[in-house]
Amino acid sequence: MAKAFSRTTRALSEDLAVRPRIVSGLAVLLGLVWLAWFTTPSLPGYDLAIAARLSGTSHLGAVLEPSGGATRFDTARLWEIRARFTPAQIARIRTGQLARLQIADDDNRPLALTGTVAGPDYDDAQGVRIEVASDRDLGQWSGRPVAVRVQTALQSPLARVLGQPASGAGATVGTP
Image (cartoon, rainbow, N blue to C red):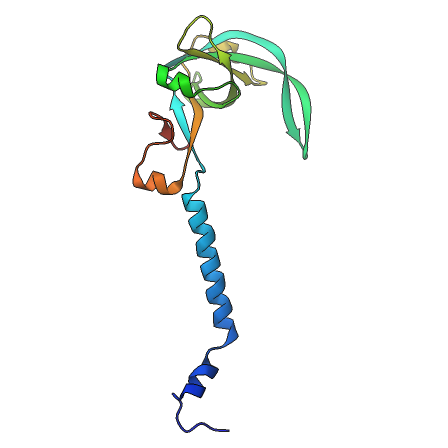
């Protein structure tokens, strides 16, 4: 039946189809998921070492290695790095935390390594020992300065946009 007036109440109610309602609902749901991500702490904060040096010592140790969904033990050469931090940073650093390291090789290219905090440096009250499992012979770079960042905080993207410091004062935020 033809409608005489296209803008009557009945014509307007028939114009509200199901598809636009579904699309609008999905857009609102996606916006809520994004808002939850934006306000949840997920960006790592790092504390940068004042000074760090690669010691020439290494030892064989057990390393947990994820392999195809299962974790297996493996032996690897563990290299030791001694890093010095401020007292405020030392208060935030714990054994087992992730550490990111960079050593400049002979061609001045950075060699990026990942290690874990092994514990305090008993020779230095403001120092920590960091162990790095590497197949490379790092002994040739013994005594060289190393850039060390230890992950100590998490920050939400919203807090980062607003310029708020990470949960630990003095932590730098971002990827090393």
